[in-house]
Length: 208
Image (cartoon, rainbow, N blue to C red; front, top):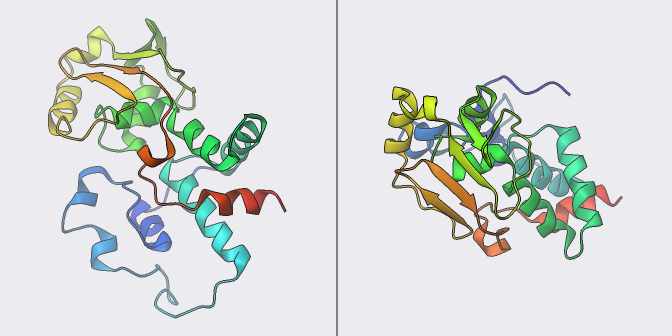
C-alpha cells in the first residue's frame, strides 16, 4: 500500500483527536483539531450512527496513523504480537513503541515521527555503534541509539534537540541530551503509553 502523502491534519480531524503528526504546530493555536473539531469533507459535521465494525476500524486507523505505519506493516506487527505471551493488544503497542523512528521521536531528537523517519533514512543515527537507516527496525532493551558524529554539528539537529529538550522522557528509556544518545532500558508498560486507544477493539477486528 502506498504511503499517505496528503495533509496530515486531516487525519487528526478524522480521528477526532490530536495524533501529534505535525510537530510544533500541534501545540499551537493553529492546530486543525482545535480550530475544526469535526471530520474533514462535505459531510464531516453530520452525525452518523457508528457500527461495531466502525468502532473497531477507527481504533485501528488511529493507532496506525499515530505511529505512521502502513496497513501491511501494522498487520505484521499484530501477527507478531499474537505469537508473544501476554495480552495481544498490549504486545502490539509495545512493538510499535519499540520502532526506531518512534524511539528517536520519544527521545526528543525529532519534532514528529515523520521527521524522525526522515532523519533515520538520511543516516543521522547509529544503533549499537553501527549506522542504520531502517525506520521500522525494532529496538530491544539494552540497545543504544546515538546521533552520528557528523550530524552532531548539524545546525538543524542542534536546533531540534534544543527545541524539544523539555519534552518529558519516558521512564523506560535513558536519554543523554548532551551526548545525544538514548538507551532503551525496557519495554514500556501499558500505562506508560500515552495513546488513548482501545487496543482490544483492534484485536477483535483482526480476529474476525
